Length: 314
Length: 254
Image (tube, rainbow over all chains, first blue to last red; front, side, top):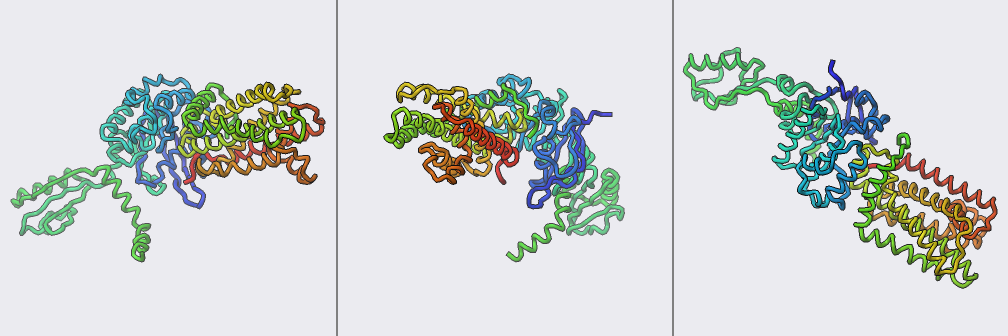
């Protein structure tokens, strides 16, 4: 059996005023795994992660990190975790080096400041005041502090938000390197590309509920693949083999299928026999993005109708 | 709050960072260094005349100690706690190994040290320039000052939780400042007040501490009064520590 490092069971978090941001979320993360919590803004990602980090008590359910409650067993859990909050807090009048030194003073077995700044690519900025850093540089500093104590588990809440593409790639490389060394990483992101690049497993959160989880491949496999093409003038879509679930918009056709290879073979066989030219032919498996957007849209349905009505009266 | 562990290394690291910030914040630093001095002069001139020079000198110095506690510990710390909370520094620190108490204590360290240094300077300078006797009961004086620092640190943490911005700290620190200045005998002995008012004034947060400070310096207080003062101080420390545990805000309101 694999070693479970993080376990959330039927987690709930309500706020004063009655809003429930997390509604019964359960998942577990194995040692050495990169687990991504995916969701749109307001899906409950940060609310969930803060419970895992032990910053707040859940209003229901249970969190275990290394088998311990991260809130009440704080003194035992904290030395083994590293946290990067969605919005980092550093005194703006301190320099980068001073911030790292201060954090080193509250961290057991801290890496040398120079080493950790080198890791995140901030070595050249160590004497700069925090208030003069760019948004991306601040995220790097935040990451540096999270890595300072060589944590076994790393919580990264939207680690690359505000970073330029280069910074994002650097961070991804660093996270992969950490995994090679055995670090368990729980990250939240609303960049699908990030989850696809990094995550061994991921879960999609929507309105406080976990709607789908698995490896990126498993998650995309739950969605149908898609074939698109345009038929020539004079060839109606009705002539297509009946076994293909085709939807036509004029001459443009879209086929959604769980059996991409078979359906594509049938389509191409038919086209050759009948001598039909399929222009703009495009066949692809579902991407994580499609899976994600579909979930967001389907789920929105009921709630949005009332919103639309309200928009109409405005 | 969890079990109160205190790790000196972590508190020092946090205190050092806070000291750097205090030194870099010119306005706060100037205020903390000059205001007590100014207030001592104000105290001296307002007290002057009525009694003998020695009594005036002692009243000035003990009042000065109260001023240092209020201006350097209370006002400074409320701003510091609010600033760190609004910058999300407190929230970030809580993700690390430092306990809640260590975070609060580390943040309070520079203000407390500065206040103690100023009180020491005040005592020496007073003895030299104001022709005042050395403290009659130094141990009691030191204990009273430390109790005052502890109480004000806790009261500052409580005050910070209903202070939204650093700018409004000037307003939220005012009640305690006025209550202490008027009611805890900083400028004039509360004996001059009607009995009921005087008794009520004795129950103000810093009244007990100030009574002990005066007794430590000038001696000659009755043990019954001292016990009452000590109990008042203790009660306020316990109330404020409870209030911190109950109401302290670690992150900004959203």
